[in-house]
Image 1 (cartoon, rainbow, N blue to C red):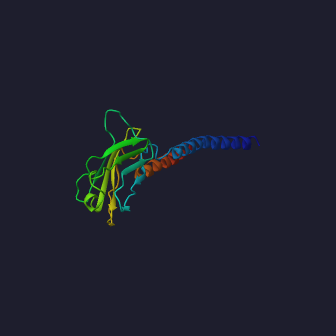
Image 2 (cartoon, helix red, strand yellow):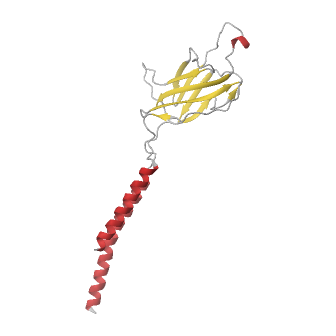
Length: 195
């Protein structure tokens, strides 16, 4: 009977010694999975006016791009910029831009304030491209563009946004490699403990 108790004690001790590394491994795995993948996400576009690919009948007096976070403003430097290209590719002149919290706004001037509104004093119909470059409050630069049409619906193909600081997302192959290493390490740890 004494030998049975001793064998049971050894078996229980071995099981307990295996459980501790498994518990540590499980805790580590849970902690790693709880880390946000988007920990370093940067400002993203929340809204535009006019909307992306919208067809408008009158040139808006203001064009704006609103982001998911405040924009950085330095009083003596213009670090947030917006330009508007007309259908022929020329840039609209005399745009006045300003930042209001998370929104970059450009005031579109009247072509010739001395003339009455009419066909000779209107912006040409066609596809307009709004390009912007902003620096979010966290210091990351975001550059992108979008289009809208003035009296001319068109099928549009747009480029994907560029974020020069990266978007803070771990690529899927790297995430899979990390998880594979963790699982392999756990299996190796279990096999070493069984010896």
